[in-house]
Image (tube, rainbow, N blue to C red; front, side, top):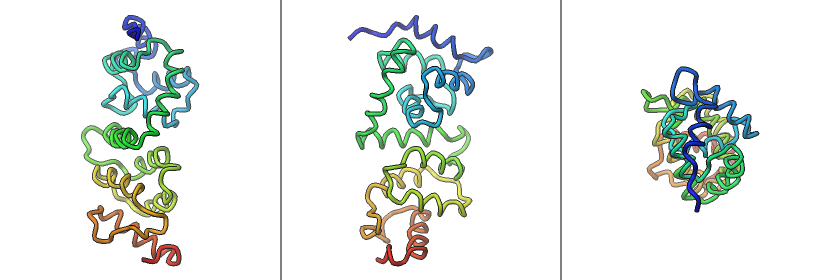
Length: 199
């Protein structure tokens, strides 16, 4: 397979980089996604960050951008645009999706923080788990009155919960090693909708 042209990638990087910094920031990313005809809230923008191994939210360093796209065998905007459909397809594999999902937590939090603000986590869950978690709307409703920040443990185990749990919670183990927030959600849900969620 033909290797990507790194010189072309460096030129592409220059198109979007910050005027005074050697990285692509929020404005450059917005322009990049406009040129790719992708909504910035589209899940594929996060998949791209995952594939580039981006370390900071809304930012691609020169190395992340050039090496990441070279690994994807992409060296032009047109090739990247054509690659987006295969990036979407890649996360249809449950094991790949789980790795991607876990990456998003690290990518989205402030470097100095160990957790995500609940509001940020809720917006991300709406993008990541829509169509993958039958109780998503109930979970988001529950969190509206919850001021907790979201720990890495809760973030990761919510994905496991979303995969294991039947809509009626019949397979939910009260004695399982779930985070307190998920236990509280199950109690809340059974109280809110007792006929649907009787144990």
